[in-house]
Image (tube, rainbow, N blue to C red; front, side, top):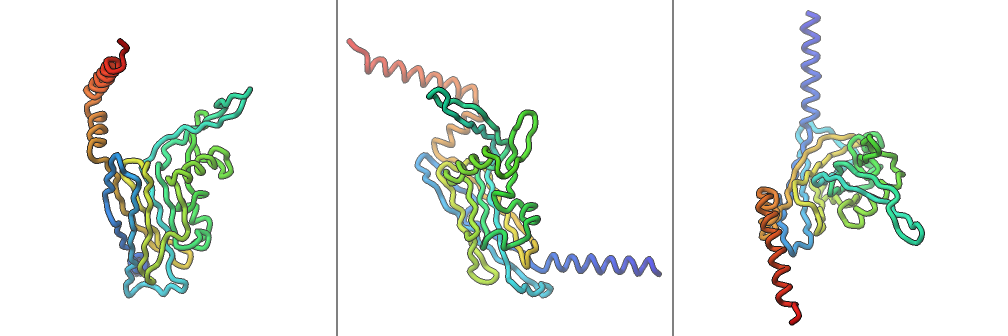
Length: 259
């Protein structure tokens, strides 16, 4: 009898947990799933729309809801250099390689991050630049470093200047208590590839639920033909490129030769 009671209690707990998990749900959509770029591409802006669906089991949220969104582009490894002036000449004196870091990173919310949740949870969810993991190659080791590291700060500063990294605690706007939107700006030099959008719902400082979406940046026209040829037909592409260079040199020698 005791065993049956224990099983019944566990079932009730699981049912209650499932109801709590299903009490609120995030539904998000992007204004487009594909961004097409060509030689005259000067940037674009996507719009993220979202709704919070509640059911009868949803508890009353005393302070309403908060939204945080992280948009992350294809990963890449980048070499950073530190220069110093030696004898009147600027030379490279130290270097670090950032390994598999996002080529694009945007962290948005509807209010300052530290007002949404406690620092430990923000750190676990990588909300904010200070909580973002940026691994560096330091000798034989690959690891993140302290937030005050000069290379880390310089890397973030350069990415922000190029509008490839951004954090904004006011980018998410609530149109109604359960409806929100946010703009996602993409600069002209945004990397081609797949981008993930991770949207998180908070209430009373706790993570309630989260959902993901995605979009893709693609090359079109002649640029796409060149990229595809270089990737899929490397040998033929190399031969044609060399022949074009030789032909261009020969044509230039004819046009500009001196009689």
